[in-house]
Amino acid sequence: MNQLDQYLKRSQEIIGERTKEEEKYDNELVKWLRKTGDIKKAIKKANKKHTTESLEYDETNIDDIGAHYHYLMEHMEIIKK
Image (cartoon, rainbow, N blue to C red; front, side, top):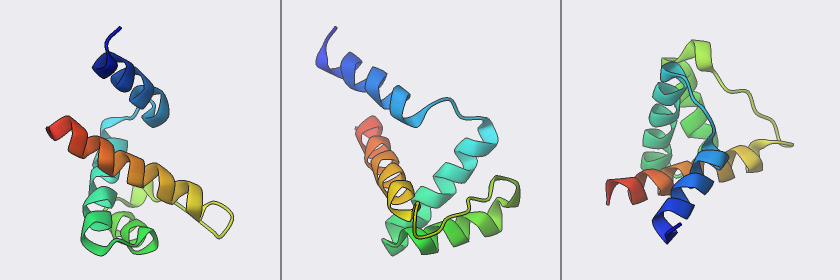
């Protein structure tokens, strides 16, 4: 298995299976994360647009959520290339 295949397999494990609605939410959140650089602001913006997929956070999980969406943002950039 080459390096690209290994990366793609690992990224799928991290990101997991997503419904179309979840993908739309993720894309919206990543868009705002790019614009603001602030995970809390990005969540609030995405939650307004995609109320059925709204993400709840608090101080115990915001760092994990931020890490996940920063990874997803970088992954999207890699896939574009």
